[in-house]
Image (cartoon, rainbow over the protein chains, first blue to last red):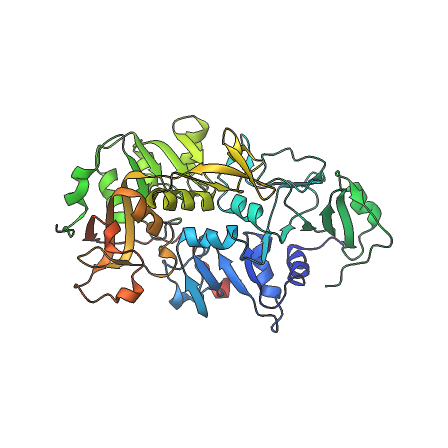
Length: 218
Length: 232
């Protein structure tokens, strides 16, 4: 069975270590916060100027001045901090964020990512995504393996405008966990019940299969 | 020189058509609502606007768009404004997308007297096209230019007669750097407090960067996505 969005988030949560400063993008990455174990203490960064992001507020705690990068109302934890945008991106560009998780339209076997623009269809802008992918050593992409038509989103070469080149090293899709090296997509884990053959058929880019591929433990 | 004025209209003489104007805020959080409304009530046009976002349809900077007051925009994300997307597709407005961190740093650099700097952001993407590149320690970077504005419009929580400013929560965002990058910076605040009542240890923007300040009125503080704990 392919993973649900929640299960993709759950698998990525297992990659999180105690003490991490983490930036979670919009969509599946946001869900990850729900699966971080209680004994793993992390600090969530929101690029609009917040460290120590807490849960969404109750009705009476809504504050128009306190939002996340997705423009949702949030709260701040007791040990949190506020700062301006240039300092926020100093944290990102300066390599102070331990883990970045974001979504993508496409990833190529060279580690290129396309996530911000669909020419003629969607012109919204890149926000902070280009800064995040250019800076982080530890980026995980959370995405669906194929589009609605069943076509692979893990490609030889991205067809859409890039967000960053040669920067992605790990991907968790609904079908698999993959790492990227100079050869292409290295298959590390299968979603429970999903065959290597199915993953191979769903991957257009070069897929490296070495030995027995274990099933993910969630 | 007295920095404090009564309201936005007292400062409109400073703004001229064709100017480059920075406007603070992230989404609708921390935007200078009073000055935005005063400009949209005026006949100013051909403005070049530098702002992280461009408001929503008919609120915030979206009002300037609807009135066709904007010639060119530099922003990182405009997805919340459908009218803008339509105008962009029809070529009715010029647009330069700037990655958010690069935008923040270009503004900070402009205000800090730094004409250009290098970043890795955008290398290998269309953002790098036409830009000078340089290799440092084996890694490629592109050159980005500092940005200045004729007028910076910013919004803070509290301010005093000297123009010292304090922000609340995430409403600081681009306002701090823009205060530095404006040849003339206009700060509107929710409350003007008496001299000496702000703790010098807690000032976010020192008054040297602020030429004019007033207490804004009728803040709407619209929220784009009210998300509550009991909804998820």
